[in-house]
Length: 69
Image 1 (cartoon, rainbow, N blue to C red):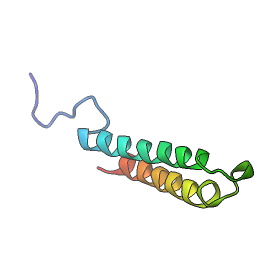
Image 2: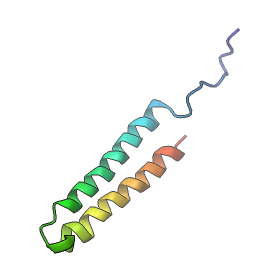
Image 3: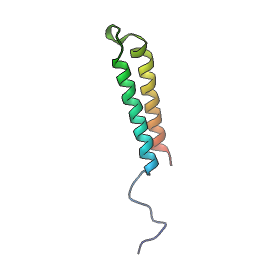
């Protein structure tokens, strides 16, 4: 006796998982950009500005993907 109003066992929908993968890709991309900096100890533009900004945007996007209904 399956009821059509019954909830599925999965906590997220396919759309959530797609958004989570996009966020994870942004986070990984941000860390890769940080490693591409040629300045000593990563103190150039890529290591100290652009990479962390991309990674932070990825984390914010992850929160959005998790909280999205």
